[in-house]
Length: 318
Ligand SMILES: [Zn+2]
Ligand SMILES: [Zn+2]
Image (cartoon, rainbow, N blue to C red; front, side, top):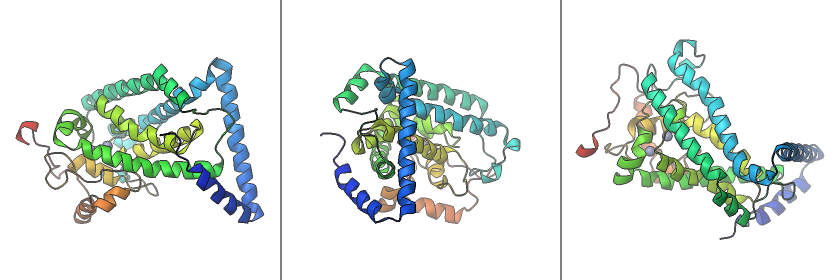
C-alpha cells in the first residue's frame, strides 16, 4: 500500500472551491495562517539544520516523539504535585474520584514504568530501521509539500477518527483473557487515574498501542508537520482522558476514568466499556458507552471516599 492514501487529491479541490467562494476577510485570514505555518516550519528547518548534519533525520525521527514526551511531562508534573497536595490544588473541586489519591510508592513505580516505556519509544523512533522505513515512504520534512491550514485541519481531524477506530480494535483485543492478564492488566492497575496513567503500560502494550497513534498521520499525509500537530492534539487528549478531573469545556474525562475504575476482565457487566477515544464513535455504535452513562446517571457523585470501589478478582479465580 502506497502512503499516504490519495485522499488529498479529492479534498484539496473541495477546499479550493470553498476558498474561492469565501468572502475576502476569510480568504485573507486563511492566507495569513498559511504564511504563519510556512514561517514557523522554515524556522524549525533553520534551527534543526544549525545543529544537525542530517536534519531531515532529526525532524522525521526525533521531533514528533520529542514533542510528545516534552508535552507529557509539562502537563503531568503539575498533576503529580496535586495528587500529593490536594489542598493546594485550584481544580480539586473538579476531581472525578473525590478524596481518592495514589500513594507515593505506587506513583514512584508508575514513573519508573513510564520512563522505561518512553525510552523504548524513543529508541524505536530514532532507529535506523524507522528512518529507512520513512525514507522508503518518501516522508517529507522540507518546505516542499508543506501542508496548508486546510490540509492540517482535515488531516488532524481524520487522525482523531482513525485513532479512535484503530485504538478501539486494539483495545478490545487487549481485553481478551490472555492479553488482559499478561499484558493489559498493568494499565488497569491504575484504578485512580492521575495523568501519568496515560503512559503506564506493560512495554509490549505501550508499543502495540503506539501503532494506533503513529499510523493515522502516515495514512493521511506525507509531511511530518501533520505528525507533529497530531502528536500535540493526541497528548492533550490522552492526558485529559487520564487526568482524573472533569475540566469544564474539555471533553469529558469521566468515560475513561470509569474504564479504569470498573472495566476489567473479571467484571461481567463492564469488561468492554468505553474502549475508544475522542468522540467514542465505535463505543456509541457497539453500545459500549451506554452502561457508563447509565452508571453515572445512578451515581452522579461517582466513587466517593466512603464508597467501596470495585475490586478486580485474582487472575486464578477468573
Ligand atoms: Zn483497557
Ligand atoms: Zn487508560
